[in-house]
Image (tube, rainbow, N blue to C red; front, side, top):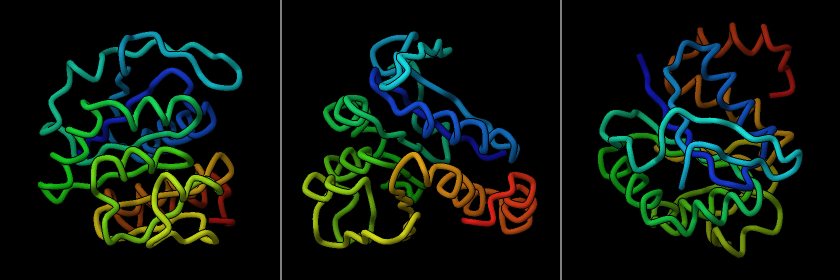
Length: 185
C-alpha cells in the first residue's frame, strides 16, 4: 500500500489539505497527517483547528512513498522555512520518491532544491518564490519526473487525482475521477 505524508503548518489552506487527504484516502492510500510544530494546527481562512496524530519530527521519511504539501499563507511560508520539511523533501527526492506541492507550497520544493531544472506550476504570483525557469502558468497540474505541482484551491481535486494516478495507476484514477464527478480534471 502506498504511503503519503501530508504535513500541516499553521496557516494551511483548508480546501487543499482536506481535498488531498480525502481523495488519497478514497483511493486506498495510507495517509499520515503530521503537524509542523505541534499536533493542533490552525487553517488560514476559516481558522479551522485540526488535531493531527503526530508531529513532523516524529515521522521517519523512509516510511513514505511521497510527501504532499498543501499551500495557504502563512502555512506555505512555514513549510518553506522548515529545515525538517526540506530535509524530508531532499531525502525522498534522493531516493527517487515522489514529492508534491500545491498553491504557494512549491516554494518549499524550491528551497529544498528539487525544482532545479523541473517544470512546475503554483499559485499565480508565487513564481518569484519558486522560480520563473520551468514555470507553467496555464496548467492545473504539472508533472515532471517525481515532482507534481498544482495551482491552488480550485485545482486541488485534480492535483490529488494525479497523485492517485501516479501511486495507484490508471484504473483507480479513472474510477475515482468518475465517482467524484471530476470531468474537469
